Length: 266
Image 1 (cartoon, rainbow, N blue to C red):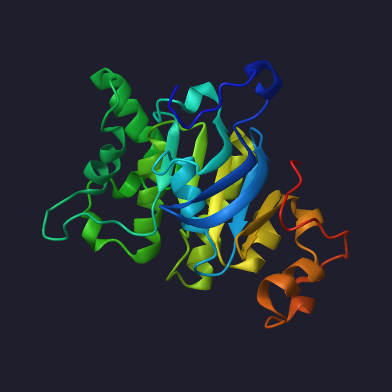
Image 2: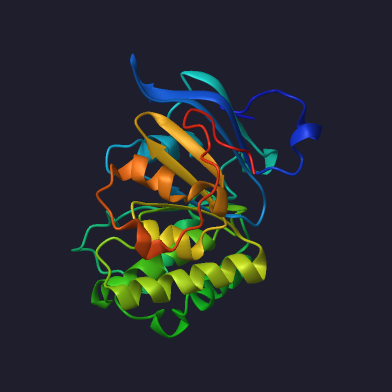
């Protein structure tokens, strides 16, 4: 187990994928997020919601093991300790555009670092392409794809690892509304039909309202987290966006506001 995993009683956390308690994160002497409390269970669809600079990327880096906690506990289920069972979808692809690459070759990059027989690698590739509706594009050039198709290929590259946790960093940026909805419907179906645990980062409130089961609001160094219906309240969102949005469009029922320094572990 890595240095990021708390050595507490695993029996108490057997039903969790991730657990954060009194967690502070940052860089050097600068703290970006403080006193974070959050629990992720298998099969939940979490949306991390906040404005640019609110700490979403910092929290993702910590979950992926790229930065250590400054204080508190960040616990991963042991199955995630080697990172082989974590699938990550970045905001963009940094692959060299001058390198000829088929969709199949691109998705196979998700297998780097995994030791599997050739037949299993082939089965994983075919399965991941099929799940994202990209099987018919396998032999095409990745660079000839539309923006939405490239995003689906990025998700397939993460799914090829058969992840217990799928983390997506603003996957719908720069997509039109129809393409965004098509991608999200695939993710929701995968979550609901296969019980895939999803953690999606965005600044899009309506996306969270439509698709999340749980939400973490990040604002001013704090996190409010819990079931969507408890967190996405008009009062919380007004605090997050300082009244700059038309909250009535979301038709939210008023719920008790959670403390901003500590989220509910629901």
